[in-house]
Length: 195
Image 1 (spheres, rainbow, N blue to C red):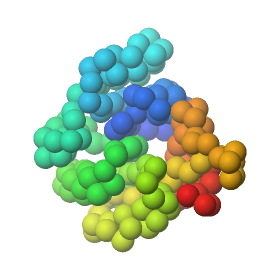
Image 2: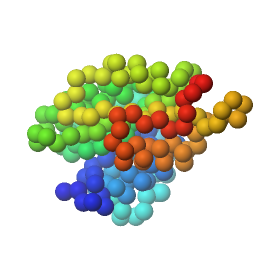
Image 3: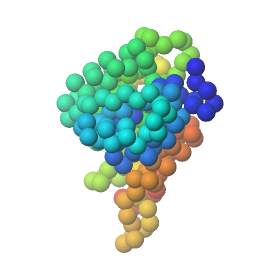
Image 4: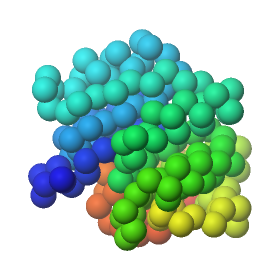
């Protein structure tokens, strides 16, 4: 059972070994078990080495989101007997994030006790279009979720005009942890104005 200091029995983080590494470490400290999904063993190993020894049971899954069927199947197989309460997913293919939310929801709806909820926190960012527009489009495509609360973190920029810059890894991680705590349906980190 989760404790106040560790509110999550199991947290699943997809794409959390690079810019989200600080958020993954923060989530590990709030979880009894952490499952990290990334494309390379090296990035998973660096995250594992950064976690305080004995702080969390850490499972590493090396899966490549560019092979969508294997990616989703590998995650679902891993969580089938130990479903997460929280999933944080940064996948550079927004619709694939929705497919993952749906696959996790179907798996958990069959295995959970009634009334238990899963939160799927989907990170949305884009260098080619306004990420808020992209987030709105994803909201329109959400499948019918039974056991899952779908939420978004929209990644913007800092500053304005010529002084505008992309968010740093630390700013993104802080924003994700704040979004986990907020419970809001959508949290925007930085500004999307003018993107």
